Length: 301
Image (cartoon, rainbow, N blue to C red; front, side, top):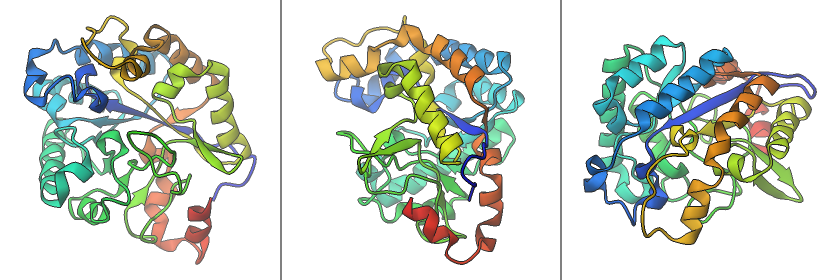
């Protein structure tokens, strides 16, 4: 484990999906209507990839198979720019809703497609809406069987759509070293609770200083790399508004979209960033060689 006060690069992660595929929008945009909505993921990815290039930042792009199938050049650009290509599944469905058989098929379809287009191995996975947890005890075994070595699919917070508040805050092996590694988004432990600090809507909702301070605390005081996530559509303030959505969804989705790009610029300047497979390279490569009890300590954080 990292000693207190030592600083490692943090892990930048991107969920490559479009605005109408957000699961909170599912009651308003049916899956069979996706192709009818104007797709803006190309332009959003252009902006995000250029932003990364401007600041020499590399990250892990959890890419939806549905997007890769229609826009293979996005996948090639991710790889050509030096980022890690990872899987977000194919159909953007919650894991606990589709069950083991469909989950396996979804994983295999997405991984094969991404590897064929990108020409690189795909070993990382993030579940749509962080939907791996107590209701999916079979998911980790299936991920290993389908060639994945790590997951970033459990957010250890309490949320109405997702979350496992009692899960470990730091990278760990739920089934012991040698199994699937779980690398959760960043959280802070405050008054016995895990508070979100890993990006997404919270990055747009909270003042920038709060997000930066939380991420600095995790990396500089706790001595652990923080995992941050963002979506391309969060840089797109001009995206079409979906009619009829409830006030909570409207607030969460559209809040401060026009500020995201500038906040990311600041974040890229203020903290060091890299791909998950490089940030956690030692753990991923040496899981079986960790000293006895070390993994227990990691899971207890």
